Amino acid sequence: MEQIRNILRQKINGTSIRAIVRNTGVSRNTIKGYIRMIISSGYKLQNALELDDEALMGLMYEPYRPPTVEARHTHLQEKLPLYAEDLKKPHVTRQLLWEEYRQEFADGYGYTRFCHHLNEYIGKKDVTAIFSHRPGEKIMVDFAGDKLSYIDKESGEVIDCEVLITALPFSSYIYAEALPSQKQQDFVKGLSNAFLYLGGVPQSVLCDNLKSVVKKANRYEPIFTELIDQLSVHYQTTFMAARVRKPRDKATVEISVNVTYKRIYGKLRDARCYNLKELNTLIRIELEALNTRNFKGRDYSRKDVFERYERALLQPLPGRVFEVKKTVVAKVQKNYHIILGEDMHQYSVPWRYSGKKVKAAYTSDTVEIYHEHKRIALHRRNYRRHGYSTLKEHMPENHKAIMEQKGWDAGYFLRQASKTGPSTRQAVAQVLESKSFPEQTYNACLGILRLGNKYGQDRLEAACSLVLQGPRVNFGIINNILKNNMDKQLRNTADQEFKTPANKNIRGSQNYV
Image (cartoon, rainbow, N blue to C red; front, top):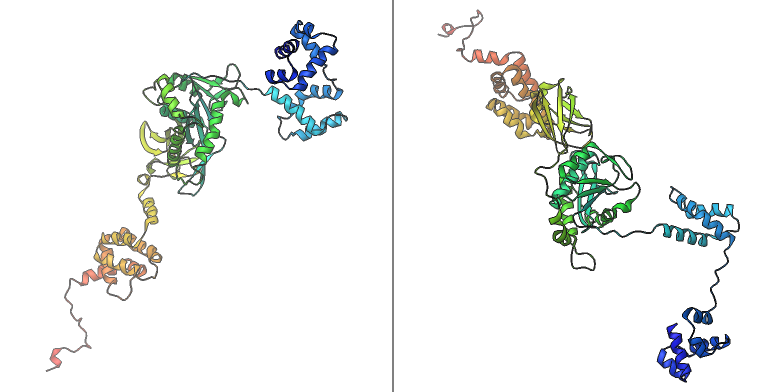
C-alpha cells in the first residue's frame, strides 16, 4: 500500500509515467493499471490517497472468494484420519487404501490426488519439536538393529553379537560395544563400560522399553526391574524409559545408530575376529576416529564439545564397577562337568566331585564353582552354546592320556620310551620306522608303552632287549614274550654257566685218544 500511495503522490504532482518507473522500479503497465482501477471506481486520485489501507486495497483488488468445496473433498477429509492409522499397519499400502476408497466413493479422486491429500494430512500430524539439552544432563541408550559377529576358532561357527550404543544428546558423543546378548547382565556390563569411557555419570539415563530394563511399560510411571533399581542407586543416576513406539523421544541415539552403521560397521565389513575381545578392540579404534572426526561443515568434533562442556559436569564414578553376579546350584555329571543353563555351556570340575551338588557363581566374565564353601574351579565365561570348557587338571589320569593323543607324534613316543630304558626306546624307534606313514604305528607304540604299566618297566625293558635280537620288532612279539615269561627265563639262564647234559648217546673225550 505504501508503494501505491507513493505512485499516486507522484502522479498528482505531475510526474510522468516514465519518471515514476525510474523512481519506483515498478513497470509502466502496472502503474497504468493502478491509476485505471482508481478512476474506474469513481474516485479521484487525491480522494483515493486519503483512504485508509483497507479501503484503498478494496479499490485495487477484488475481494477474496473461497473456492467451492466439493463433496468428494469433504468426504476424503473425513476419512483421512482412518487412512493414516491404517497405513501404519503391516502390509497396508496407499494403493490398497485408494482402491478401497474408490469402491466406497466411485466419483472420488484419482490415485495421485488421493496420495497428495493423504501425505498432506500425515505431514501436518508428523511435525517435530526442537529440544535443547543441557550438558551432562542425560545419556540415551539403545541396541543397534543390525549385529556384528566373530568366528569361533574351535567350531568355526559365526557368533552374532548385539551392539549397545549410547549418546550424549548435547555433544552427540558416542560409545559402542559388542555384547553377547541383550540380557540384564550384558546390558549392565555395557552401560557400566560406557560410564567408564565417559569418565563420569550423567544425571539420567533414557532407554527403550527393553525387557532387561523395564518390567512394566507406562508413559508416566514405568516400573523398572530390581537390578536396574540397584544400578541406579549404585551410580546415583535416574533411569527413564521412552514412550512405546516413540523413537523420537531418544532421537540422538537413533541418529547415532545410523552414524555407527556408516562409520564403524562399514569399516569392519571385511574384518575377521575370533573372539569378542578382538571385535571390541576394532570397534574401539573406529569409535575413537568417529568421535574425533569434525562435524560436517564445522571445525570441531564430538569429542571437542564433550571435553569442553560436558566432562566436568558429569557426576564422579563410584569406587567400584557395578557387577551382576548370579548363583545356581547344579549337579556334577559323570563327565565331571556342570551345565550353565543360561548359555547351555558346560564347565569342568575336578573329576572326584562327580555326582555331587555344587554352587556356580557367575558374572559376565567369569564362572566360579564352589563345593561346601570351597572354590574348586574357576573358568572364563564362554557363551558358545552346547560347548565345553575343560581344564586338563580336572581330568583323571586315563582321560589325560586320551587327551594327549591329540598331540601324538614320533617324538612323543620316543620320549616316553626313553623313560623306561634304551632297549625300549630302540624297539619303539624300529616300530615307528616300520611304516611309510608313522601315524599308522602310533597305536602299536601306545600298546608297547602300556605293557610297562601291566608287567612293570623292568620286564618291558628286558623284553625289548630280547626282541631286538630278532629280525622283527612289533607289539605282538613283545606282548608274547611278557605273557609267556620268556624275559624271566632269559634272566635266569644268563647267570648260569652252560654245561652239556649227560646222555648215553653222547661220547666223551675218553673216546678220542
